[in-house]
Amino acid sequence: MMTQRTAFFIGVALLAAACGGQDDVDQTVALTGDPVALDRQLLLISGDARKGFLLDVAGRQPSAAAKQVELPYGALRAERRLEHDEALVICAGRRDSAEARAEPSTLAVIESDGGVRKYVLGATPFDQLVQSKDGRYAVLYRGKAGPGRTLQNVNELVVVDLDKSPSDDAAVTSKTPEGLAHAFERALVSPELPIAGEMRRLLVLLSAAEITLFDLNHLDRRGTIVELGEGEGRMPQPTQVLFGENEPVLYVRGENADDVFVFRLEARSGVA
Image 1 (cartoon, rainbow, N blue to C red):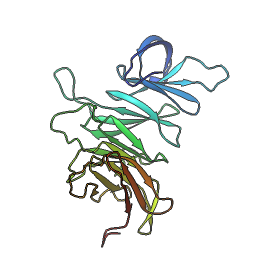
Image 2 (tube, rainbow, N blue to C red):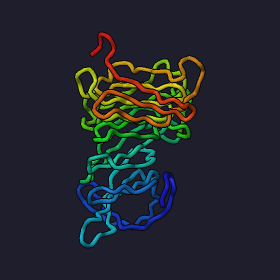
Image 3 (cartoon, one colour):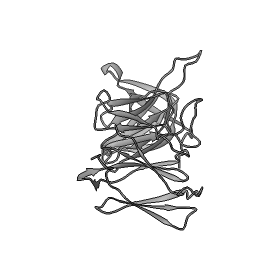
């Protein structure tokens, strides 16, 4: 099994589709991460070559011929967009140096026909990705062992609305929890929940002693931070989150706590 950042080599005949033409090229490519299965194709990426390769595997006689797509710098890994025939590729970008100009962190969406949508995320090299179940939202953040850069907030994240074009307003929203006492370690997206007369999805961030909630329907609003230790200095280390079925309830279980924390989600006073 291939693992992230494991480089291995494959010789394929690549069909380059640039400039409307196709050229057969014998090329040895160092691949990055696991392949991603789409409906009729297999996507492989090479961070070193800044390319993705779409192999048609659904034909009666599958071929090693691949359609090439250009990727931004620093492709780390790819995964399928949920409920869509597309792949998401995290590209970390790079800082400015004497050898090369800076390139931003980017989420590249590879479409089944070889088209690429590029959502520019900024200077932070994100390496973790979580999606909503319908594939509309992608949330990117940095893991503990991810590539860090000096003077960057470890709690920074971005929310990408993949139903929008990269140039649309609010296609990419940067958020940083304000007042969070511990760096968050995990993010997840809730199913739609009936809150204040509206079906809403929540972004849930888990840290050692808090959970943070952002309303994906209203990303212009501040997040809500809930302390799980109740001021006693406890570190419940939340590990499991369950959502009420058709009701705005959140259940949280901690690794270092015997309690199950239950929250009923309601709109703030004066805020719909």
